[in-house]
Length: 229
Image (cartoon, rainbow, N blue to C red; front, side, top):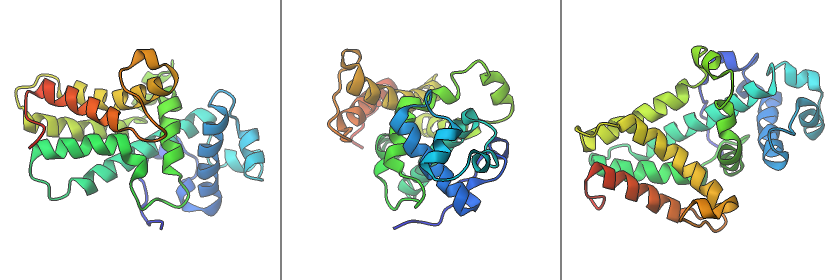
């Protein structure tokens, strides 16, 4: 069953907010499916229009180019994870327990229900794993950063860094650890599926329990605290 939440994103990412219309939601839904199917390099608005039985012009009314569309999808996912962390840690007092929940949410965000009708979170998660870094590993990253395109990711990382600092106020690298938890989760799922000699974890289908265990191990070892609390 779908839920009626609206993800708030940088208005400079789009020409019209696709969440506000059935056509815009259709663009989001089909772009996720098509990028997952053929990859971002092969993806273009002509192919998207064919997929959704519409016109290129209709897509261009919402997004200026495919890079902004990808950045929109990646930002949407970051904001979705942030929302889930808030919901899942509500009324949790133990910072150690919060971090365990955060790690589980990072790894299994696509499994949380209910879902939003026009977004297949499971497919979007696969897209983030395989294509997500292409939103900011670009020559234009500094320009995009000045436009505020990555504020959702920064705020999410800050949220996790605050919990890390609650656990160990003397830990020198809370932001580095926070961002690494996100990057490690995605990288090692990708490695396990495609480059297994680069990791020590394995994944079966969408069972990422070994990834969750690895992230817990690194985080709690670095913070020198007991993860069983």
